[in-house]
Amino acid sequence: MKRIVLITLLLAAPAASLVSRATAQDASLVAGFADGFTFHSHVAANRKVDSDSAVVYSRDGGGNTHIASVRQGAAPCVFLSNSLNLNEGISGTPVVMFEETYDLRGVSFEADAKHRFAPPGGLYLTMKGPHILCRVSTGGSGGALKRTAQCQDRFEATIDEQMMPAFKAASERLKALCNWK
Image (cartoon, rainbow, N blue to C red; front, side, top):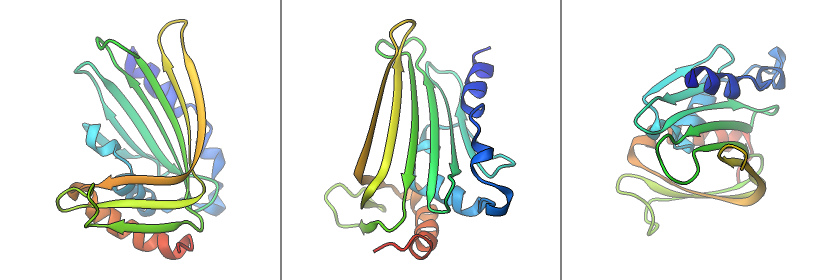
């Protein structure tokens, strides 16, 4: 039952209508961004690409059921990420949902393998631009759900060795496509 609820909540969003057939999603670019810039693949047991080119990650059981999708937004340099976590049996927040919009148009980009936070075989990524990351977070339990929203002009992340092939391929294409500085 909970798997059906997760899939329904995550995939019921009208994401397919956000990108017309004329602005078809580039499946390899979406997959490269999803695998190279987000950490969904680290917590997922399963990965698939849907017919609308969304990359869907999932993991069921073990006290934490997780499902996430990453798809292209209305513009080629905008990506939408939705994730839902059901933290069964864990004290704290049993339900957490994130809706994130990454707007990579015209951002400054620095990938530093020698940064003090860069993992072995990886790098530390810093990107700056207006509203580069907007996140809506909903969490809580029962009748005590809390929603917060914030936009940031800076995005920082560690890119580990596992993510490097996808990161390198996607970042080269995104630099040109999105006019990175």
